[in-house]
Image (cartoon, rainbow, N blue to C red; front, side):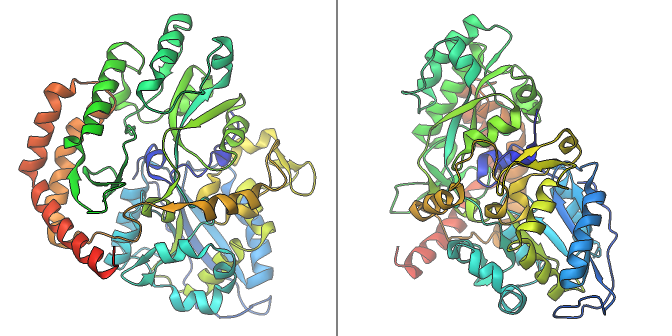
Length: 496
């Protein structure tokens, strides 16, 4: 129920991000017009910008982009054609489009979708440092400096990060109706193990409800910072020696997998969890009790608005700033774009102009939503035809407030960001060039067992040793050695 556009910065941090694993349905209409710089007004022929972004393709997207184009044509002499590519298709389709030299101007990228660091190094994106100084001054004025600093690749910026929550924090989310009905408290819940009495009660009293909703992208929280998203190499969050380990060999992951298998056997987890693409169907019905999510200030309110029933949450981790969260949502300019200056002018406007930002985000006032006062909005029934992932589209701090949000929501967001502490690997970007074959082999080898182990579907006593052997046979040791050597050099260079 309600709108995905309200569904947080899911994806910004690792876990929920990959809840929407990736690959895309493209269309490569765009423009070949030369790009006049500066404010074109109406005297010049407008430049059409081709914008590729992630999310379930929306019925009214062309209609909204028509309104966007009227606004941007007048302001900066551009019109905009948006192509949305579904979550599950984005990686693959964008790789094909980029490799074919398709005519694109602006594209969504992240740590978890169309890999930002990897594609910046491959030359898919234009470096934007000079463009930011010339056409993107507004962006540098509004963006927390940690975003641009943390998303440099080999000293250069290649993407405009969305101004959103900076730290990532894992929470347990609960369907409040079921908590109340069963008179359950979440005061003592934090660890995976602490959920057990609540799951048991719900299983007994509500046989038609999934006690712990997980899908194939689920990973139990462990206090480690991962070298690569959903890849078994990580450093413990408090390890000042920066030793890289295989996550399957850590006591924390061993315990988590054993607990998940116990929960699976007890019937707390969906039988088909290891192959389940996403949890959105069950969230729409409300037939779930708890799941794992990545939070932000007032997230419960966002989720409740989106689902149409009350959600509450409680932390299972500390709030830390990871590479994954800094690079969790970005818009890059294609290296092939013929309109780089105009693309940056558009991104600058998108991130500084509330009229444009809310039009792209929420659609047309009076059709898709109504204003309830200066800064607040409510969705109208038509919003089902235009339901955008807010986090992926730029500066979230320009968007209208939801019913129930405090008036100072964005000030509180800024305070949350200021209080965020860096995770151990913040600023370290692994260069996989020398071990790319081994990485491909390990990715291939892990497919068969990763989701079954993480979701508790199989017994880790039996399958984890087999998984470790497969990973080692595929070359994990060589990757670890190369990564450790880069890590040691980085540690020395940065006086860690």
